[in-house]
Length: 99
Image 1 (cartoon, rainbow, N blue to C red):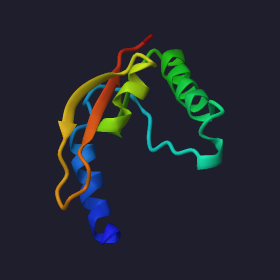
Image 2 (image 1 turned 90 degrees about the vertical axis):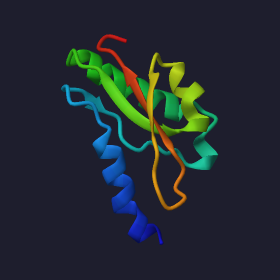
Image 3 (image 1 turned 180 degrees about the vertical axis):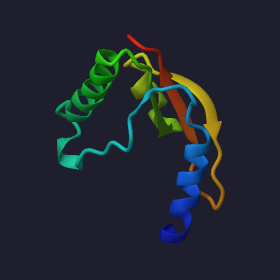
């Protein structure tokens, strides 16, 4: 099922990407045993630092329950990306250049 749903999820997400130049912070996962040590936060900060160095905004998608996590980094919600076939909806998240 995931093999069939994956391309549709990708298409739905891609259709919502902003048109202006930006850094896209793709899928971020951290092994469960490393999730308490700040590894994920360090990765997000590194991605945002690269965007800032290039003078570009940053965009990512996340599931609804991750919105507050990314908001800590100055990333704000954009429209929800609804995905068919029971896949969880994703939020578009945007941070202007320079944060």
